[in-house]
Amino acid sequence: MKKELQLILLILIFSISAGMRMSIMGWLFFIGIGTIIIFGIIHFYIHIKAIDSLNEKGNFNILKILISHLLFAMIIILQTDTGDNNDSCTGIGYAFAINDSFIQKNSEWIFVVLIIFYSIISGFILRNPKIEKMTDDTRRFLPLTIISALLLSFVVNYGVRELRESILSKREKSNKTTMIDKTLTIKNYAQHRTKLIARF
Image 1 (spheres, one colour):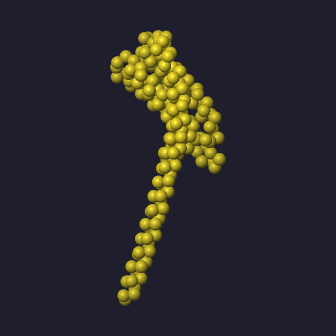
Image 2: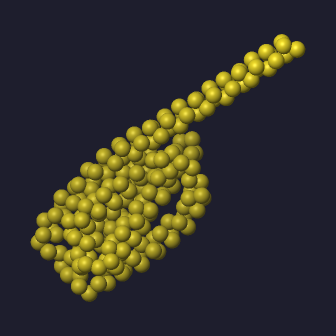
Image 3: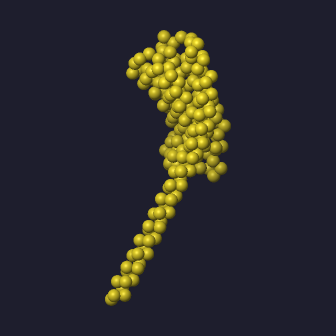
């Protein structure tokens, strides 16, 4: 995979994951921030260090990159956080306003399993004998890559909140429409029944 595409993918995955996790302003918010920082540094280190070796053509390199990004994203967005009313949710559950109770109940085991698989794929990436010191081109793009990822994560954070509000608003309108339809159906049935009784 080309270096430019690797950097773009790295920025997008980090910013989307971090933005979704930061959207949950619960009691474990600072733990979430700590996780983003720690795993973010690790993830950037792995992919920046191996960027030249992963630049080589081959489906296996592409597969390693995609699996690594997927596991990193899952580690971040599947974290559970709890609010003031004891309602807990994950980053993805909050963003799409969905019930993710299974993930919440098994969050610790899921986190451990993800860490194990992430460590394995990271080992596959870093054990490549062709990994060398960072080139001047890579060093030049590194600050811009990190800054872009951080700034974009705040944009994603805002987008996630807007997405959630939009979903909840549509759901509320749909529920109101359903209630109105039910009320009209009952009313029409009552009127029809009254007419039938009046005939007899």
